[in-house]
Image (cartoon, rainbow, N blue to C red; front, side, top):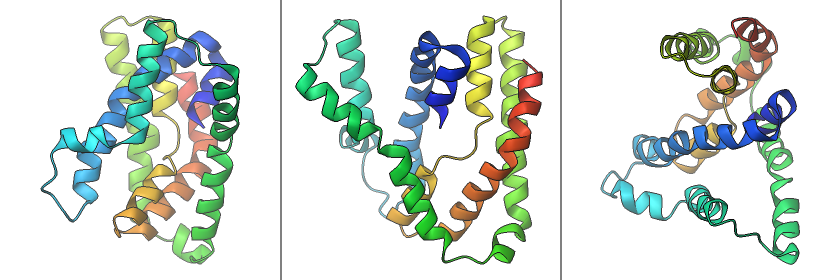
Length: 192
């Protein structure tokens, strides 16, 4: 949801900035986040990084961007078509998991609202304050704050399922954060 929204709001150049912004996020997610969720704590963060397809793709993409290497059409077109499936497949996973919960369970968990408040309100406001304090360029501020104001990624549900953790909490957090973001994204955008 993040990069397509950034593209529509701010254009192609902003997508590059947003992608760079996501590198530390994904690095932390696939190392520290995986380590928190994993029952097996012995694996080195560097080994985890070396085996993470998302980070390998970012690394290769960065090298190709710097060296101005273009993939041949026969490679880029299938990869583009495959990447277009990311959101629909994620929605299918989310929908399948949602069927196991009752509406009362989803909207009745008070901890979810606290987590959503931190994710959708506090994090973007802190980002605005920090970026304004250092006089960051307006485009960069807009991109970072918009990315911070987005709902929880479906990847949270996938990772909790992968590690047999509290998938119900992750699922409820994901659903409620998406619903609440309909209200919070416009509110946060006023701060920009």
